[in-house]
Amino acid sequence: MLKLFPIALWVSRCSSLPPRSPTCKPIYGSPEWPSASVWRSLNNSISGRLVTPTPPGAVCHPELPDYDNVACTEVASHWTNTTFHALNLVSADYNDMACLPNDTYPCDFRSYPRYVVPAANAQDIQHAVSFARETRIRLIVKGTGHDVPGRSSGSDSLSIQTHKLRGLTLNRGDPRALALGGVGSVKIAAGERMIDVYEFAAAHNITVVGGADPHVGIGGWIANGGHSPVSAYYGMGADQVLEMEVVTADGAFRTVNQTSDPDLFWALRGGGASNFAVIVSVTVKAYESISYTGFNFAYNTTARSDTFWSMVTYFHSQVPQLVKSGLMGYFWVTSLDPSEPDPAMQGKLYGEWIAPKLSPEQVKDILAPMEEHMKATTWSDPVRTISAGQEYPDFIKGFALQNQADSAGLPIRLGSRLLDENALSKPLPELKDALRKASGESVGWPMLGHVIAGPGTWKPKGGIAGGSNAVFPAWRKTCMQIALPRSWEPLNDTAKEEITTILRTEEVQELRELAPDTGAYVNEADPTEPDWQKTFNGENYARLFALKREWDPNGVFWYKNGVGSELWEPRGPWGIENGVGQDPVQLCEVGRESYES
Image (cartoon, rainbow, N blue to C red; front, side, top):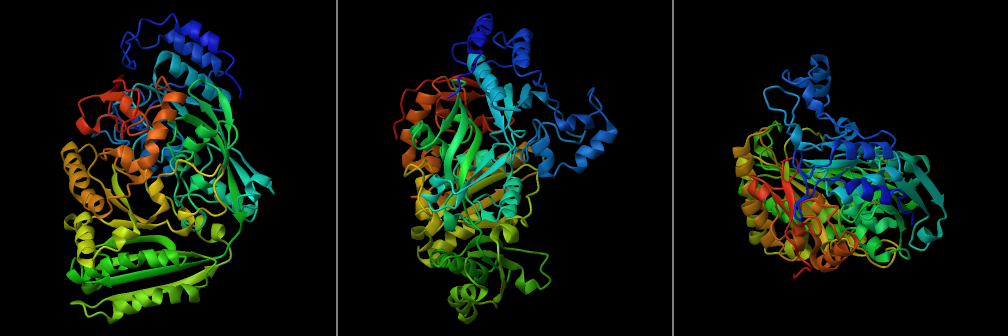
């Protein structure tokens, strides 16, 4: 464990701060806000790297000194590009609405962090964390900014950007990995994205479990569990971790594993990103390269018809058996697809199966009973089934490196639910009613199916370092996830409130009732989800809460619905949205010593 050298200096410098409120984190302009000299001290300690950020959209606002029409055109052209947001100090992929590259909207600097530490090394992170602890400034951690719930944004804050922390190291024959079913390990710095990891894996002919979107960062993905295109085969991302380098709330740099700080190691693998510590690197298992079959499918019938929903329901009812047979993948349910030329086929369920170590013929045999049933069933409308597969010698090169990044730059809210076999085995009329009501059919929203759970998440391949981790226990019985994406016009608060309220109270409620014993994946869930402790952490929450109190007693790390976040109240005019993303709030302690489930 490496202690931060200038801790005593921070204490002496901060002792000259104005008297601070005993209950709230300071906001800009308040007497408790650190003076310019205190900020200069932080800047000096990190070799002059402290930045006062300007929102990238500011160049598009003529009333601001940063206005630059040429630069505005450039920013606007990249606004939907996730790489652009990852490289920027404060911009996020989604819900970055406070300063759009469009002068018809306002530009609100307060919604962004006041200062940013673009960390070049672990020491920079140590200084920033210690500064936040001593000044009680709100602290944000931003990796790539690929964060739908809005945890990498925050007003009146100091932000640590980890994007510059780069490096990948292969340790073939790592005995820790060999003991757990791997062929070696890869040490991944916190600033690496999935595309970087996959390119490294391809160059070394290994398989590393990672996220589907190539621009997702490693830290937030793995610390919240991390599902993968092949998690149903290998296990969750957090199940692969052998060791982590982190900076904890006391400013210490620590290497944690199953023998060094094992309780913290347990919590960091599934218990939440940037809530117990800032991740500097993770070391994960590597596996041999594997072949797989990619099998595309499309099932069509009349839009919004009873036949369409009967077909969709029957498909969902078959998922448990399909995952037990070795299939995983992604699908979309579109109740009305106007791009389909045949009006009688505009109700569409389509996607791709991923089948590690299975041939196209084997996949076809697995799917045959379901597709034959669809063709043979006498429904009111005709059903068209199309499917075809191709085998690839290497999953990383054939799928992971070919997958496209999601578009960015829009307001979005996701509702979601994990579905287990009990939910998918409900009587077909009950299952159909729930899926139809949850879908948002009346306004044409798509429904996304992530079949990313199965034998590997139920019993991770080779086992887990230390025997267990804080991955949400519902993953150990889940078959799939349903995600319900919603969007609205930028800064249309009326539409946002209406859409998100219906999503939370009606559409996702249908899925809660369908699967009452599961929950939701926090990285792809509604940040206003009720009963979030149970929904995101289940039976793990009491232990996680106790560890949060132990490792971060002063609340250095906070984000909406993170473990222990109920110890602080985000105060603002936004109601249930207080603390979500960019909306300016002040965090005030409410006090609670234990968690009662």
